[in-house]
Amino acid sequence: MDTLIHEVGAAQMEINFLHGDPLNLADRVFLFKRTVSEAALRHKMYATLMAKPMENEPSSAMHVHQSVVDEASGRNLFAGREGEPTGLFYSYIAGLQKYTPALMPIFAPYINSYRRLSRFMAAPINVQWGYDNRTVGFRVPYSSPVAKRVENRIPGVDCNPYLAIAATLAAGYLGMTQHLEATEPLARDGYHLPFPLPRNLDEGLTLMAACEPLNDMLGEKFVRACLALKETEYEAFFRVISSWERKHLLLHV
Image (cartoon, rainbow, N blue to C red; front, top):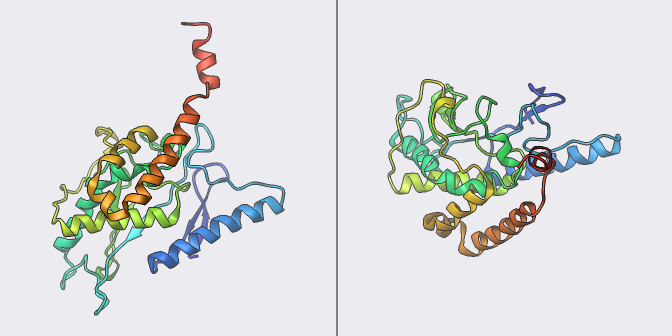
């Protein structure tokens, strides 16, 4: 771990991990989440990893900072010799922009996950990108060439770190191999733009099922199992009549 600080929400903590190999980092995140939950229970408290545990309070994310290095030289492929952004950098972002909507069942895997993705609540609602812009899905921090990276701000804290990291790398890889072109960086508030991401789990599952490049990349058996599990969860949720529905509809329709 690098830092542990208080965030904006009530009893909300932010934990930053040092960069590293993706699989090793996923191990660390997974172990930390389980350790925090167990430690809290032993002190007669609870630590929740829901994306949106409290109404009118900020939600919790799992932002993923990513860069790609040359295996032989160790050079960051997102920065040129003079520190300028490379074509691979822009194509990687373009892959995230194109394929993220179909990856939402991984980035936002539960019904509650989509309550986090709302306007003006420090969570992204779009697939725009920008330099140090925290109102877009993909933020590029100002940094030295060796630390040139893209921050995927869409995954929630409730997601599986192994799957979330694999999914964001897969989207970037497809962007590079398909030579996709990113949009222009957004320098203004992104919350006033349209909402291109799925608004619920059902929409995300439909997009994931129809995306052949991602099915090939992630594996047909995995995608089929993921869809079956999440469709079962969604159907179980859909049968529940909420207290909001009874309050607003029971005697008024």
